[in-house]
Image 1: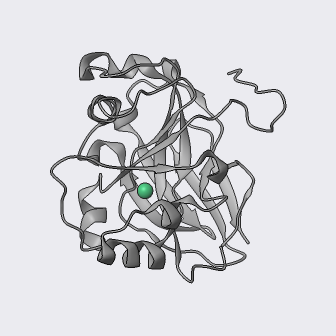
Image 2: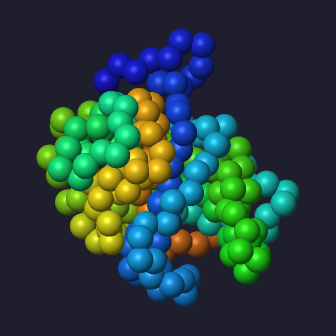
Length: 217
Ligand code: ZN
């Protein structure tokens, strides 16, 4: 699909990056988090984006950067207060993404009740793969989602296990932020998150979507 943005190496002009935390029960359990009563929403800056084949740089401020593989939606039609029933019409494409997280900084922030912007927002903390046209994905809730670290399967989930499916997320998120063309929605990670180290090669795979490969520096 053509979303070329002249002047940058991105195939589109990225808007805001909206992310969902705690959207898979087993991941909530592995981090001993409370199950939320509504989706946990946070933002990443567009400067954290990296494309397929790129590098994630471990920042000096963290000793514990974790991988989180996620299904990512590209918004193609702007909307506010989008009802669940028409939510999927606002998605132009899907991609595989990684929501890198400085877990040590996030844990400190959580203890103090402070925002996650730093823990989630470093440069290169939001790699995304090439897009697949939404029209070619029959049911995005019926996709398996996997992450291999140096060829070892470390995350193995299924999009049907989301606590809030994509249409619910779009309804909830768009009641807060206008979702604009070019925005990205990261839909949360299944269980199996863990640390990355310099030299690791990550391969993120979702059925029917172009694979995402990222190396760690
Ligand atoms: Zn995440």
